[in-house]
Image (cartoon, rainbow, N blue to C red; front, side):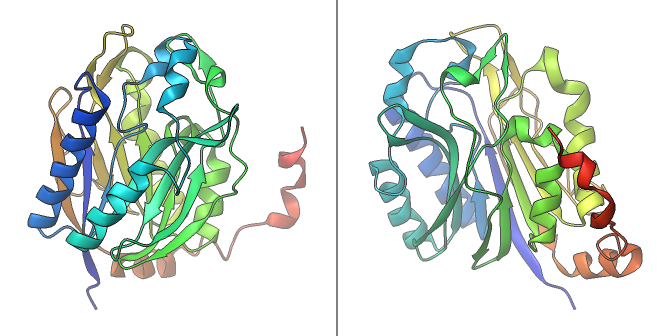
Length: 280
């Protein structure tokens, strides 16, 4: 039996200021809801530039508490108004000096369901994230939402298979991977890793990347956001590599049981043999 949900991703360029960036995303949520979307995920650090291209403590001001801060409260009201599940990738301040790269998850009635904190933090030219973020300590939660069981894995996390697997074992049906990744560095991996994770863990993946070159550096964010199913098939077209775009696609969750019954990857795993993989 079909179990179709309509899901959306939003990729865009930096507008130049925080308030207009928030307004662009509010409009994207309204547009997604108008097209019948039930769930929408924004890009990594959605209301700011990708400031990790530089190391500047002035950008600490972009962090706020989750869920007590004004951005979560603002989008809770919007989620409630539109009846849409929202995933908000944000800069979180737990307390002064304790900062995380985090995604807040809001249900379709506006309720706050929880957050995921990015585990794997890069520190390479153009991606100076250890200057801004502590490694996540929230585990790999799966959120029971109005549209099903949702997980989040953020940007650089996608290079590490362990979190993908943890989300699958916890029952995720859709995993969103909000990102800020640039043309010269990772393009060859972008349409390889997430489809492979969808196959290995037998769920849908929504991969989101911003677009454009920002005035903080040379990173050329190449968009090409997409949904991929557990057979590594893109659901509809991949988004533009240069333009702002709202991606809205129908995902049939009934396909998950079909694929899992066929392959039985979870049945055939051997956790008893994997102990050395967790050794430092």
